[in-house]
Length: 93
Image 1 (cartoon, rainbow, N blue to C red):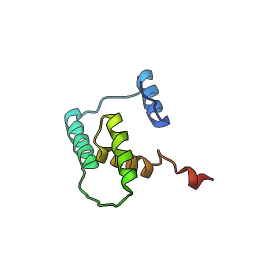
Image 2: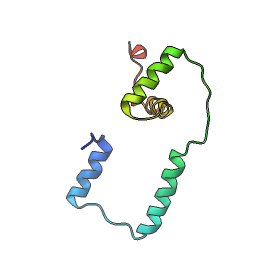
Image 3: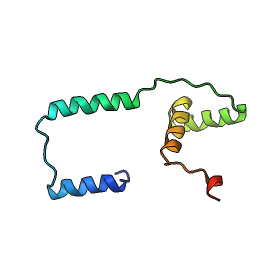
Image 4: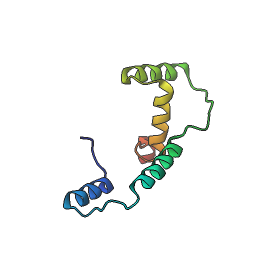
């Protein structure tokens, strides 16, 4: 199982205690949450960057070893950095 953050652990504990109640409008809620998720994950912007070819080759090699396209890897890295899941070690010194 993947690691859970504190909020996810709190939800899991509430579920295990039986504190959670089913929504009265389950199908409506599912539809609304699905729409929110789709809009959140929508890739609607394009960027163009220049970087050293060595870095690009390294990104492509890393993506290949992960089994994903390199653009997906770059997007994931940026997303994690923005969300604070990746930390710039140089900034913390």
